[in-house]
Amino acid sequence: VWGDQAEPIDVVGLDGDDTLWRCEDLFHEAQRHFRAMLADFADDETVDATLSRVERGNLALFGYGIKGFALSAVETAAQLAGPHLSAALVEQILDLARGMLSAPVELLPGAAEAVAALRDAGHRVVLVTKGDLLDQERKLEQSGLADAFDHVEIISEKNTVKYAELLRVLGCPPERFLMVGNSVRSDIVPVVELGARAVHVPYHLVWDHEHVGSWAGHPNVIEIANLSELPALLATASAVRPG
Ligand SMILES: [Mg+2]
Image (tube, rainbow, N blue to C red; front, side, top):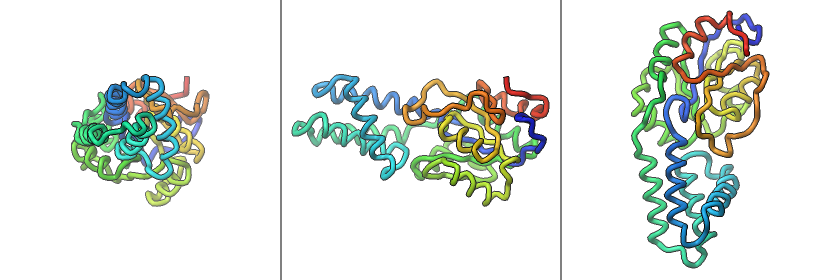
């Protein structure tokens, strides 16, 4: 297929956040509110830079997701406000996180149709997502797609080791696996390292941390504008060559 591979695709892995449903918009909006909360203590650039540094430092222990963000926001506020950090401000930050955790799930264009079409075409369709377990389960449930997947994998980190484990559990050789997602770091690079194929669906907002790596020119990767292009791409995959 593309990458001059002849193996048919058995399993299609789909990323959740910013591939099937919107996510980064929530963080973007929350960060805007967070800057306003700290306006008495620091300018916007300082708030952003401090939060980014604190989040990176905490990732290995807190993991991805809204709860990790909230803890890092409290730590950032403590650093910037010092002894002026009030209980009211901590409460505001927690309210911000609660709002994010209960925000309605908004599917991206073509997502539901693509999942249905892939299953109709005989592929096994698997959700592969990272972040808070509770939050990802809630989003899957609210998305209406819970019954559409053959398997759901919510993992702490998307790296080559985790993908290899997943393929072993699914009994799928890498040559027959395709991963579809918005993050080059999480959905593309570790997958093609295994010899599998990937479809990059860029999203207009990218968190700093995910803004790493490049697949430019890699023969196992192809880019589409949104998920509605995916079923036709797979159907005609043998005719496709990366541009
Ligand atoms: Mg994503």
